[in-house]
Image (cartoon, rainbow, N blue to C red; front, top):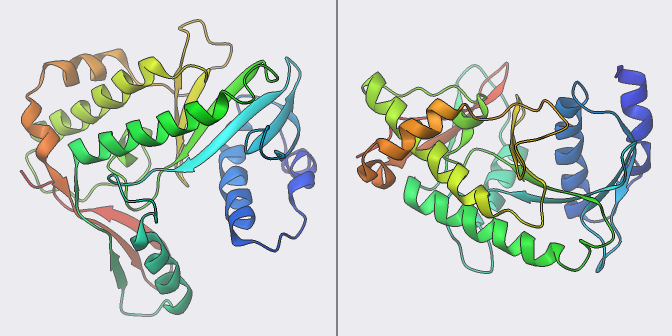
Length: 257
C-alpha cells in the first residue's frame, strides 16, 4: 500500500472533531494503520456508532472488521483513570524542546500490576464487544502502549536503558511475554489482540491458523517465561519520557527487584 491509498481509506476519519477523545483515537488508529499497511489492505475505515458498534469499523475484502481501542495502563487505576496521562499531556503541550533535555516521570509499577491492568482492560473490552460481536465477522482489540507500560519491549519498539544483568533482564521480559500470552488465551470474542507503539506492533491470535503474517511472539520466549521465577513479577520500572531539541522518546530505567 502506498502513501496515497493509505490516506484515501483513512479519509473518512480525517474530518474535524470537537472532542479530544475522537481526535486522540484518530491519531492512534492512523498510527497502527501505518504498521498494518504492509500486511493487510483496508479498503475503508470509520468511527463506530455507539452504543451498538465498536470504536472503529474497517472494510476488508474478507468482511468487515470491528475494532476496539484502549491505551494500556501501567497498573489498575480507579474509575477516574490514570491522572498521570493528563499531567503528561499538559507537560508535553507546555514544554518546549531545547538544548537541555526535559523529562517527565511516569508512575512506578510492578510487572504484576501491569499484567493485572492488562487483564482488567481486556475483560472490559470483551464485555463491550458482546453487544456487536454477531454483526462483525472479524473482531480486533487494539491496545496502545505508551510511556507508562511495561510491555514496550515485547513489541520491539522502545529501547531499554537497563543496566541490569542482561540474562536477568531477558528473564524479566520473558516473564512479561508469558503473562500477556497467558491472558490472551481467553480473548474471545476477539480474533486478534494487537499491541502497538509508534515504532512497531505485536499481534496475539485466537487461532494458530491466522490469515495474516503479523509479528507474533516467538514460542521460545513464552517457554522461557513459563520457567523463570515469579520473583520477576515484583520488579518495578521507572518509565520516563525525555524531550530534547530533536526528538521526544521513551526510556525505561533498570527494573527494580
